[in-house]
Length: 102
Image 1: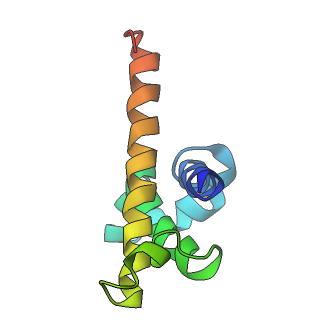
Image 2: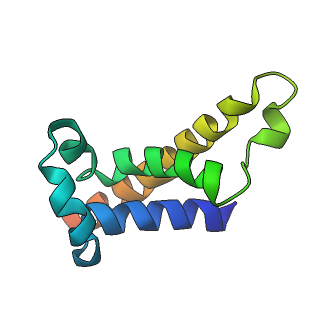
């Protein structure tokens, strides 16, 4: 679970902010809606979390949700989990950068 969240959050932050993600970010910035999405690491982590849950990792929430909801809901829950972890990382980095006590 930790490797899933760190992978998704790291990939989102790399694409949205860091220099290695520039070749992905720059062409997508020209598309109106996607351009804003690809520059926000927290927003991007939600969509990358869904994609990673579908294609790279087995869904983390599927074993817990399969009794109550259809199978396609589990990757969405995984995306929200990635968004939550990415937001927590964002809050801690912003507080640390501003010099406030954590």
